[in-house]
Length: 152
Image (cartoon, rainbow, N blue to C red; front, side, top):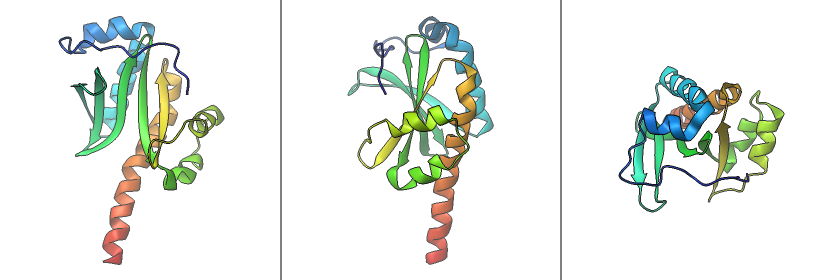
């Protein structure tokens, strides 16, 4: 996926609170708020932290102690990325997602053995697809743990 601007929130001393995020996200701030509601409905907990290796604030979104989504702020958009193991991508492609969403995933390079499923949150329209992938990621781990217990 090609990016047309640079990541924001690079100043370690400036926490990404509501005022800062409104300024960075501009018109897409309301969609970001809807995204936070989606996380809340799924029992997810977002946590902003400054990462020195990337020299930017990132938001790790967790279900219990497991990371489900990584978020980064860009001028005018929030980027939400769900890393899915390559071996599970056929199941993701089988989800009822918009064709553009699936094509975007296919065109994204793997990171190690995972495929980054990237969503640019500019408006609330993409949240339905993100919700499906988030729920898949939460359930996929639960299902793999259950099958491990059955094998034991």
